[in-house]
Length: 178
Image 1 (cartoon, rainbow, N blue to C red):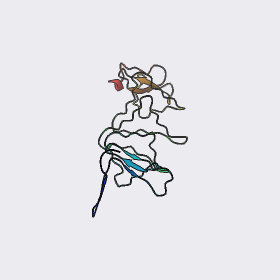
Image 2: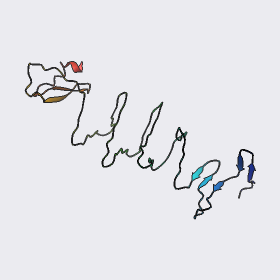
Image 3: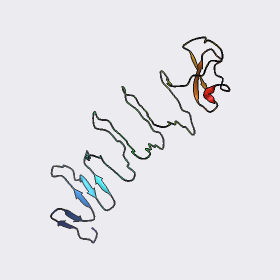
């Protein structure tokens, strides 16, 4: 009880319901909890699975809160921001895992920035592979070891390879750092 009256209006193409709270229950359900309940401020779906189908998927305005977002079995999960930014934030931590047999890929048309404002960036792997690093020209003829390179860093932080042998990282004279 409030002091209002609920109304149901059946039209030719629509049904209008005016009530403080609307609850929908299934005939076969065993609990008293509604499978759908809404007021003018909140809608609650109590079904075990909420499924929305459409050619464009589900479009929501405003923030979405969920403890888990999961794809159906054997299908991939896409989080897409077609014309803006996609932010994944956690107040304590954000984990991206690919399970026992999977891998994680990050691809960008522009730069990819890893930044820690108050900690370290740790690369912990059996192998760390950096492909496509530029190679500086040797200062003298010949290399001590033909397949060995040194990883060098310019003052700007840009990495490059220099011929191995212990003295190839000349960041002052390397054309890569200019």
